[in-house]
Length: 184
Image (cartoon, rainbow, N blue to C red; front, side, top):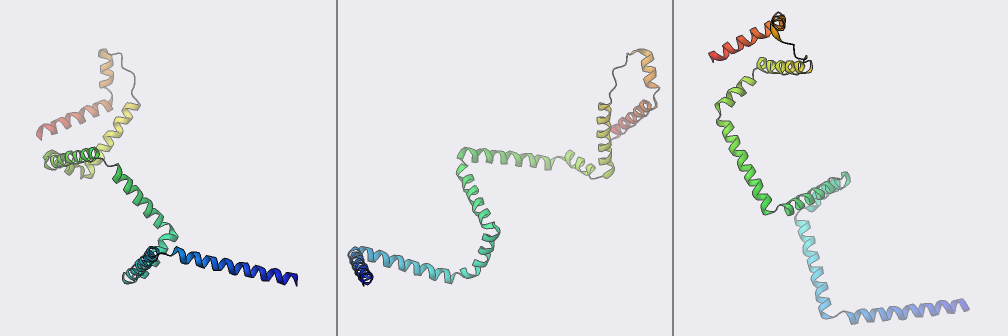
């Protein structure tokens, strides 16, 4: 029966502690606290009503998918980056960006009005012209890579160079090119 008495005494202690807890809670509940609790409860009900009226239940599946695949984290990180960028944009940086944008618009306007540029763009739309430019660039790179040391000079060196059929073809090509340029 000793154990039963201990259990009974433990029950009495718990009962007394619960009584003191209820009394303390009653003492702590002032009119101000009750008013604030009522306001919080009212605001919670208003928020719940707004959530119901805004069809939030239809958005929850999309939000759940965004959470599952990590898109929501990316959106949050992007918002942080945008916020940091906004904070970093000082008046000086904004002024410099505006000046750069203005200069770029002036350049674009001048390019759009340039007849020479338009003619060049028209030429670049022709495939054989583009191929010629590519071939010329490749030939120039190849010539630069295989550049031979300077000749000793003199009339025999010039005669040897002039007797090379590739040199003769190149001279004919440039002569024809310059004749055509004079016509234009």
